[in-house]
Image (cartoon, rainbow, N blue to C red; front, side, top):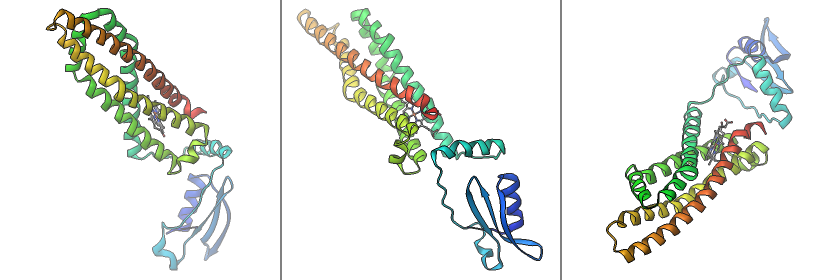
Length: 255
Ligand code: HEM
């Protein structure tokens, strides 16, 4: 039941704007004071009385939608051209999430598929390029981009689930967002724990190469080779996880 200020006005809003139908109404002196409207099986009583005047705008309803009702409900909203509003927080979260998610996957794909093989091919000269990249703060910027994607993603998931994450995970859409999110989180951890230190150490070793003695050089080169192989291998795993996350996010809404 909802308490309302003007039952006649509410009736017009529910029937003309939202497309409810009137089930019954109780009138006094030609004006409705208690009435029931319904839509798709959902029944709502609207009540205006002098005793409840100060409670207008208050009331409580419980709405539960079964899976097969969601489509009909959305169709009704579209058909009646009912204006709906997303909150500003959602807008900012979605923007940050998709924008930084695209940057994260794009930067990692470029790094894994093009930059790393090119660096390996360039041999000792590759060290200079790596040092130049370090000066541009790649090891700081990339984790920040990833963190913004992760935090906004988990926040969006929490909002989407309305606090019932387990319930959302039981739907195909929720499972896709959830498993994609878990893959992205794992990719981030691998990047921080394995890839980032390997890249930093490679850059430091590469910088020490020109001033090293010949026997040190051989050792450093072998170490560089080992680090690059480890970096490349982890890079592929991270990339597979990120591509899975991207793919799952892309189709989740339509599952
Ligand atoms: C590689 C990282 C990620 C990328 C590239 C990415 C990409 C995207 C894209 C493109 C969308 C829009 C999909 C649509 O509107 O149909 C989206 C939505 C979403 N993502 Fe991610 N995502 C990433 C990580 C995550 C993580 C870690 C989570 C945490 C669970 C997450 C949860 C979500 C949720 C819940 C939505 C739906 C938002 C809504 O209600 O509109 N994402 N993501």
